[in-house]
Length: 300
Image (cartoon, rainbow, N blue to C red; front, top):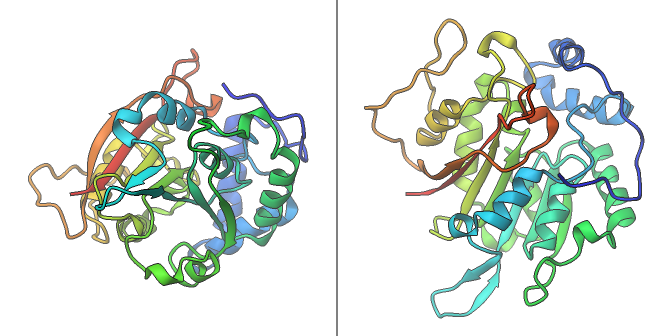
């Protein structure tokens, strides 16, 4: 697993898992519906309770980029005329920006998107402190490091695309890689259809373009509330197969599989699914084995 860079940030409270989740539920009871984004911003403003903030990149993302390039490819996009350019990547809800910087080290031109302005400040500070750490040096000298840009905005709006310098590319099919970790699970279930629709819209319809989801938490009971909300593989499957559509849930809050239902417009197809060699401790069983999954999606 990745080790924390030498430069350390503000320490976090190391609460037991159940206590941490109870505090999150209580906090978002007061910040539901239209106040949901505000709830995240307030946590960043306080800065003393950020249980999702691991301060190092996801080991599962590193494993995916290193050991599953046969599925996700590299940071080079091959154009129809045979020339290449760097792939554009997006990390929505990027937090402190650790995964943004990792993707940059692998050669991607990355946009880290956050709603909370304090999170953006944390991104810039972290980047300045850790730029020269071995963790974020170029992984392939022939490719070199890509670029990064941290942008404030609402994932479901379009105005941040202009601030990211991507206005000339329109509002659809912009990114060749999108990485989702602790973003889907942060969505209230009623928001998941819009999440899937937005992912489908932003992902380039190209066989070289991938949505990578680190599925977490996979073992939390569906009726356990959130965030993080229970996010088993079947939830990703149903929502990304029917972007923007209401997906049925049973009385226990579990997604109902629809194996014979036709895929909806803009549906994404799962082209890879595995358990990573390593992941953050929060994504492991009590015996230390990995509970998380990686799923990779493309336009059909």
